[in-house]
Length: 162
Picture 1 (cartoon, rainbow, N blue to C red):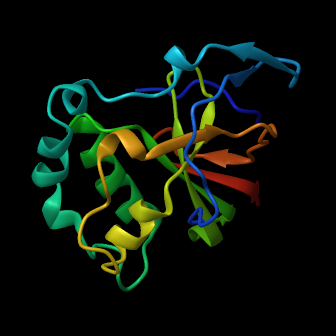
Picture 2 (picture 1 turned 60 degrees about the vertical axis):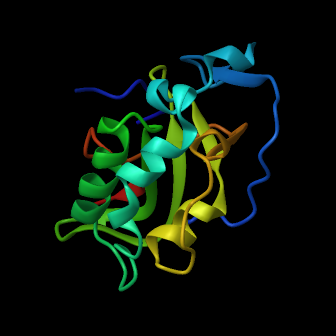
């Protein structure tokens, strides 16, 4: 399956910058879209620290690793609180669930993906006290198209499946 709008790595090299991001079309090519379409947080725009304070107890939730269920619970809570819609891209999914290496991204309503600051992973792993201001979480657009074999229609995708 290709990148489509969602229904109902931890990235360690992301650099946040303002840019024009591509929108992937049905045939996998990219067209330019203005930065104003990037994922944003309504609540964080009025008080950037309130969301971080509201989610403070998530620090260290992934300290001993994480499963697809953990990702759904934690990323769902972030999104429900007004934060960006975060997703985890796993290497594979099989009859036992999602697995392998993973990377975190933000996804907008149109199915476009964005790098996220490494602070999110460090915070969820307990290595960092706070993840920084929410306005810094979503970084540059992902310019290569993703192909997914499996999705749980929430916060997990897999590159291959069985």
